[in-house]
Image 1 (cartoon, rainbow, N blue to C red):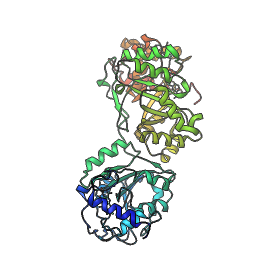
Image 2 (cartoon, helix red, strand yellow):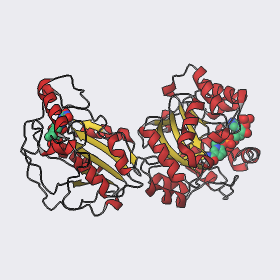
Image 3 (cartoon, helix red, strand yellow):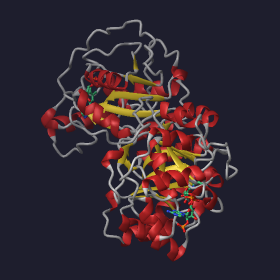
Image 4 (cartoon, rainbow, N blue to C red):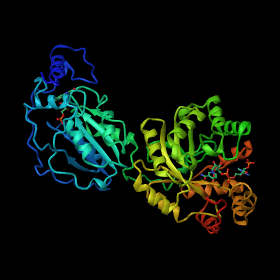
Length: 498
Ligand SMILES: NC(=O)c1ccc[n+]([C@@H]2O[C@H](COP(=O)([O-])OP(=O)(O)OC[C@H]3O[C@@H](n4cnc5c(N)ncnc54)[C@H](OP(=O)(O)O)[C@@H]3O)[C@@H](O)[C@H]2O)c1
Ligand SMILES: Cc1cc2nc3c(=O)[nH]c(=O)nc-3n(C[C@H](O)[C@H](O)[C@H](O)COP(=O)(O)O)c2cc1C
């Protein structure tokens, strides 16, 4: 007896006689697949090259014998406005080939033969145009059909993100997707998802939105709904990842120990719900502790941390370290602190952490137009935000519209010019005059100017009165003339080197 016959016979026996098989690995007896479905004729016999999607970045690749997977693939292509590529076997599968009750049917034989690699007709010419590949297949005995193995071994997936999906009669995706990882080890693999034949486009849309992929769709991130804010409660902005983030937070650079913890607690008491830290600040533990000790539910708080360039080479371990130090479950937003060697690899490690639910959104810091335009084509999950030096004397008026056009939020560090520069800025004649006119402080006028420009702010402070003052900027509005007067203060004066 040939080696594969025994397992196939056992499999067929299971289908017919037992319900003890695992729902995630085997067909369920009560809902057996439609018997010997007649494969539909190939609608595109020449196996055409894919139509490019509108953004040219995502491609939906699928194998489907009875068109169930094809239906889901079409929903994905419609939701993501992507092109499609159907994997066509050189030798089409007949209904006899698909008879899973016959131990020697072609499909069963292939699934039992580790070396089976059914040939594919034609080839995919322009895979290099795509960054994201949705890869769909029917479940055959708990696994991906071997033709998917052929496909993965035929191309170079380095730098691409693969998002597996499957259809089945009732089995889950199980290990069918993770089994494929070794065949395209250079790719970033997202967690796979199973759909039933009746999956609707809105089911698919919901799934795709939850993946937070860099699909090129922009959201308006250039203006905030400031009228929704009240002093002590900053409004939020919807990130391209789908999460909401307060537009004003507390910066924690240079705050340590009890000073740091007390600042976070004072900020929480004043209504702050967003905190900015970084591995290099050495205060993630204090921030985590203050949050855990507060009465504010974790879900209402938004924490950003950053990986420093000296961590890029070992980003996975660095991410774990941040999670451990913060100890607040997940990280809302993780940024690369600066461009540097291995920054793309580090970002990809963060993308994997997003897939694993450890981080919710990703972003960058100290990336300007040139750095960003080089970086974006190399990654899959769009950065939701860029955090750069911005204050009245260094306004980045070229960078802000560029980022906004990409659907990327801009956040200002050193909003008051940074320590050592604040007195000069607060005493600036224009800013002081405007502050006086509104009965506000210079600090409040600067923060309001940022917010009216569509820039998120994270002023640093360890003084509870200043903290309270900084979140009290929602009861006045700068006029167009006042905005223009502050805009005119720009003198390209950077206060730090990066
Ligand atoms: N990504 C990056 O590369 C990068 C670089 C630098 C900073 N950052 C982030 O940006 C945050 C903000 O920057 P920063 O904290 O260095 O500088 P900053 O916010 O421009 O200025 C902080 C200084 O302003 C004072 N201050 C705050 N509110 C005030 C108020 N209402 N009235 C008077 N003085 C006030 C603070 O003193 P008191 O403590 O006395 O209030 C502190 O000395 C940092 O904390 C950090 O989270 C990021
Ligand atoms: C050989 C073979 C094995 C199958 N094994 C399973 C299985 O393990 N679990 C399951 O739920 N469905 C199983 N099915 C059913 C298919 O996964 C399901 O009908 C699928 O949606 C077909 O997709 P398609 O129409 O795109 O080819 C199997 C079907 C065949 C032909």
